[in-house]
Image (cartoon, rainbow over all chains, first blue to last red; front, side, top):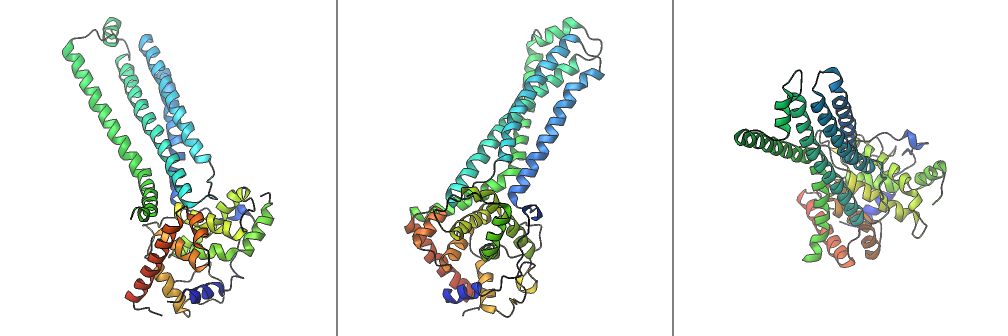
Length: 211
Length: 167
């Protein structure tokens, strides 16, 4: 095979009719992997914002003990704060324009670094937010309607039989484990494959240096 | 580089062969090629301010175009695997019949088997870039560039031979 022949055939292609749009906005939206990641992130930002708003307004429509209501709002506020922080981080990742003028290795390293950081913040945010949200739901459920306030106060001050307390703790830990596993699975399902592909390309670039 | 949108597009038009070649090297299916072609132009536009004129505009274009293909492009498995030789390429120049040009067609068929970095190495090598320039573009050492380029060339020749396309 003669590469000079290939080069001359490539160059002899008539490019006259190959159309470059007259305006940037005429460029068709493409469906490259990075766009899928950005679309997934954007959808999640919208969904989680809606969920937090619903949780904030929900007690307005249900009768709930004032102490339980206060605690519920404190927990939801902290959850909203955590959500806000990681949504901001995700938003920054979405907004940053790709710096593709540097060499390929640096571009890949930068994207892997940024994506990993974003996903770590995301995973930690989701896990801690979900755990607080779970607590808020338990308090909300315990404080609904007309309840025996002393029983409720005993419950939140953990003044309950050890056996019951241990059962609550085990139940909470199992749920926490479920949330953790689900979050890791969800993150890998939507974002892990792209990350793995980039890492494979990077590894392919380095392997010859060692041999 | 300060440049207006229309000046930029004129410049891209003058060098559109680069965008076409990179799209052709990385995409087999015509729809994918179309996507990548457009995405490269978009990324060039987003990156144009970073072009300081320290290198040729075409070299800078190759760098951004290859990075776009290597980092952003991945074949959509849901999309049918189409055979280029049987499909009309929507962005191929008019009057150009790939079927008639078997050598180039076989070359592109063989290139499909290479990994992303090897495709970049082969294209830059064919375009006459030096080992140092290729090394700077991809961010790998010159020795590594030489080893990998020779290996990719050998692999390409073997693929062509195995497919019975030898020329």
